[in-house]
Image (cartoon, rainbow, N blue to C red; front, side, top):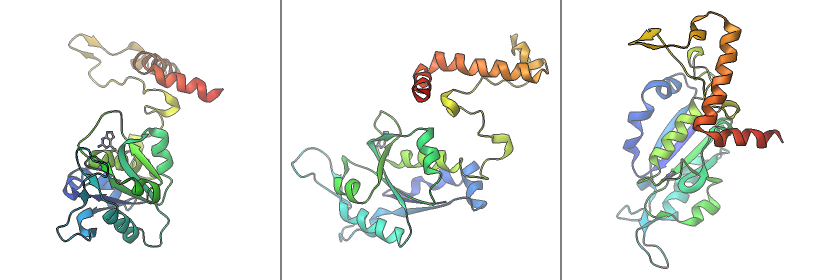
Length: 230
Ligand code: 6GU
């Protein structure tokens, strides 16, 4: 997969994508991540990439021109899924991440200021994605969240030790609770069943715990599950 990111803060990306699993995914050529400075594409002689909103109001709006030209140049003749990060987009979840992980090419445009000229969303992007119902200072963190959630799903990126099978949000359930040594930490004990060596019992307990935890912490996920079955 190739991911191109268009941003006015290209320096924000390296520290995250060049560590840990995303770094390894790049080294193993499972993903190519390229970060582009939007200012390199502006026709404005002062390198401006924003302007005041038509109709008045506070703040600045990201201009169409640099974004249209950046996407055109980066895209070339490839088929690319173009995404803008924006608080008014679809809220990212595991299903969306899995879907994006099937793409060969993605361009992520990081939104800023009061927003992006709507013509970008209408004519250049296929979709807008938000990472939750709160406002960030810019779309860069959202783009990183997107890159991380998608990259770890690419075949061969996670090792056996980091398996996807039982993790949270699979089957709309949270993951079961985990414990490691010591079995008795300052008087706080690990559930007995996990020390029993009885694997079918352990599996049964884990399934029950996943449901109990989901009921307790994220009952909305269980509702989703019922709806999907009907
Ligand atoms: Cl994608 N951008 C901004 N600015 N704030 C957000 C967001 C995106 N997703 C959640 N909050």
